Amino acid sequence: GKGNMDGLRITELETIGFQWDARVETRNIKHNSRRSVERQRKILDPHAARLQYHVKTVKPLVRNMAKCGQESRQESGMVLKSPIIMEESMSMKGRNEQTMLSYFTIWADGRLKIHKYKVAELKGQTPSKVFKEGNKEFVLACSKIMKTNGGFTFGQSKEAKLFYIATKYPGMKEWNLQKELEKIADFRSLSPGKAVARLEHFNTSFKKDHLWTDLKPSDFEYVREDSHLGCGFIPEEMLCKLLNYGKKKEQASSEWAAAIQVRIFAPSMGIFKGMLVKKSGIDKIQLPSSMKKVRESRRNQEPSVVMIAKQLFPAHSNRYLGRYLSPNLKDPPTSFEASHVKRFSDMYKRLWKGFGVPIEDIKRYVEGAKTRNGLRHASLVGVCDPTGKLPEGHVFVTGEDKCPLTGQPKPFVEGREKLFVSRSPCVEPSDAHILPVVNTKPNNMQRNEWDHLCSYPFGLIIFATPKNKKVIPLPVKVADGDLDGDQYFVCWDSKILETFDDEDVQRKMKASYVIDKSKRSGCLNDKENRVISRQLGSPNWLEEA
Image (cartoon, rainbow, N blue to C red; front, side, top):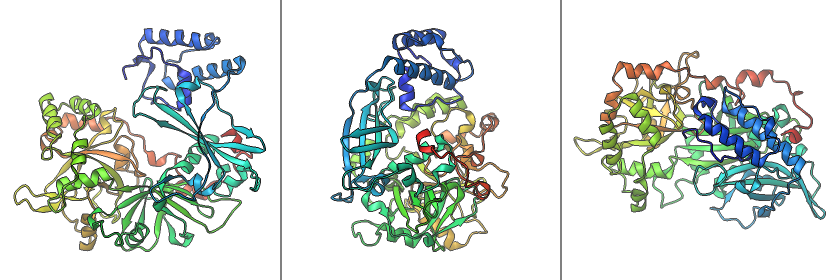
């Protein structure tokens, strides 16, 4: 955190796949720390003399160190330690509804083998892309780095999972992995780096009862991109049907999900990723172009669709927090109350202190937030406006709380004028904003639309759609966020909010330059979808990826 890199093996950084933020500059690294890195590299790498320090960002520094380490490994002939075999020939059979699965389990049923390595033990070595076991042959499809104990230490708490697919296996048809992947979507049109990122969607975990394979392309429709930023819509009736709401007697309607985070795999449509928020008055799932990550397949136009829900929103923690706030709902379990009393993020303490919030007020709030009556912040998932009628520049927070005068339930937004909104990581003043709240029905909104918004359970922050298309969307202004599943830190404590009435503080929030994420190439926008050539891409994209 303070730039001390003593004892850090840069080869482990490359293995983890960790990338420093470009805004972190090498001037923050102490000179003696750089010498320590050089000493460490001499131990690991006889070619450390080739190493050149870069003065602009840490990224090229890490990249060049890793390159030197790779050259030395190839010359020294290091032997890779045997992996832990997690699962072999994984199959859908015999798995109950609560078992965590991935799309690999469905698509490569019986062909999947997962190798697991402790990152700290790799020592910068590279696992094989292809390996054989007798008459079996396995090809690497993708990898995933996971924390094992929740710590944030380089290598010590990381595990690498490598997903291999059997291309030759007794009793199974021989596969060409690249061609089989191209039957799902047009990976060839992507750069190798993009292909790597998109293949990671295959190992998104989900529960068996959050898998749907009976949908058809006719159940979907495209909508024009309008600052959706990775968020589409799903008919309310369809969402209830998919999640079997109304059939589970033990689940109250107040506990029903208002949004789901999905992955959609459809050869005739492509691969989609993002949020679907429930909406009334529609009969099809609506997909904006910002949700589309890979074009439709060139090899396969089958009308099959696989949709999986990675997570339901509100999440359990916010459902329980909603019980805290609403007098209409039963109290959350005592286990939640005990687990919720945890350390308040130092990141937000520093941010508030930098804005001039008095230390005494910060301490008062942090201690008070450990109690039910003092808790006035939450982490909410961001979604776009299903009505399209919220005033530009405003937000709406779902759920209800207790009226301080009568003790009766009321909409959460009623009586509130503004909220402090930020997102992790927040390192610049412009990463936080004081946003106005829509606390009464807008004049251009129908009563049933307002009631629909107010019916959503606590746990969502809805961002208004800008009317001026040249205006940067609100989520992008908040720490360069989007709406495909990002969580936003929201605080409504009146004493904390008073500090932000100061004009100098407001000027700090608006001073920093913000990149318009909606114009980036991470998604296929409408123009790119129209003009991209289907002939682009390498014929050996999988090998390059």
